[in-house]
Length: 138
Ligand code: DGP
Image (cartoon, rainbow, N blue to C red; front, side, top):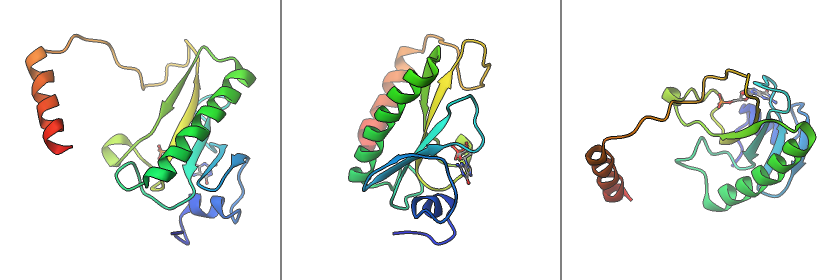
């Protein structure tokens, strides 16, 4: 399904401009218009899904394969210190475009991007309880 006014659907239909990197039947990669670092790219599902909760399994598989392909190319082209793959769902995760996409984000030691968290030991019983809640919902 395509949503007429969704900007990423419009890019997928080649109706809106984008620096497209590659595309296939189920996925499309293009440059992020608000790059958080040089080489920041996006990979989207061609189908209109809002986020991880409703994207189809075939589209997700295609997106992940394209993410790896683009990540290898970005890594070769920019030689970053590292590379983050980021995907946000919902307002609490600051998802701003409601069409499923993954960020391929080159990182540098100095970029200061506020997406790293400190590694703090968890409380074993709390981790176990969280696992129980997730297993019950699977
Ligand atoms: P998120 O906040 O995770 O939903 O990421 C959405 C990203 O999409 C954000 O980094 C900016 C980018 N973006 C928004 N509109 C456009 C657009 O029209 N073209 C392109 N190329 N990127 C866009």
